[in-house]
Image (cartoon, rainbow, N blue to C red; front, side, top):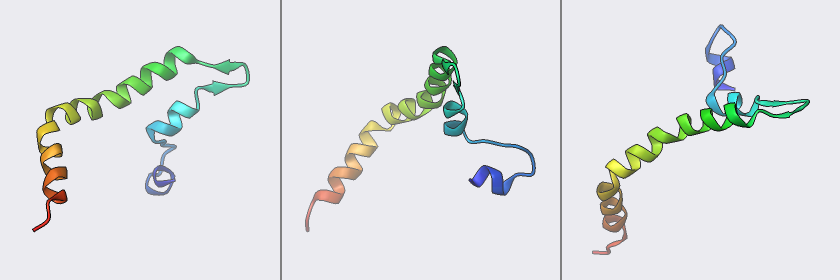
Length: 65
């Protein structure tokens, strides 16, 4: 919805593009999986790089006093 409201051209977000790989004849598994992996890899990489800070922040918020 944001892509349609904020742009003048026909723009789509990545989850919408991934969902559009479904056709009347079935799913285009190869293209859909490749795009999903490209979409997921940066999130996994940042999580691994910042793992100590994420755990530290979770434990800091759990300590009383």
